[in-house]
Length: 137
Image (cartoon, helix red, strand yellow):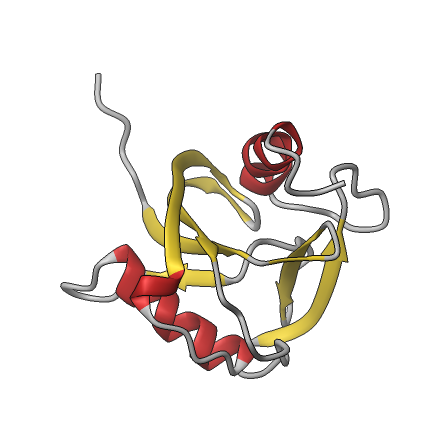
């Protein structure tokens, strides 16, 4: 039986000094990867480029994105919703991310975050894969 997907998102893996960038939106408890919902007729790459510009003031192109995987889980701050997230590694980042728009806070986490509540896709899918590939500490 097919799973009903309530939310389609694109997420970006940004790594610096062996740590993964995560963001927390205003009014939310969980830190998740930067990115956001796909808008009408938008590809996951297009959505991520737009979201990184809006939320972190980063100017990247689709060619800076490498597909990492697609994951499904219960939405971090909406337990009655299923989210499907297409995740990309962001390469050639030349600017420092700056929290803007709906982003309240940025954090850099290692493979075992203890200070923050982290969304399930980050915690159960992305971090273990990054650790296995020796991309984070």
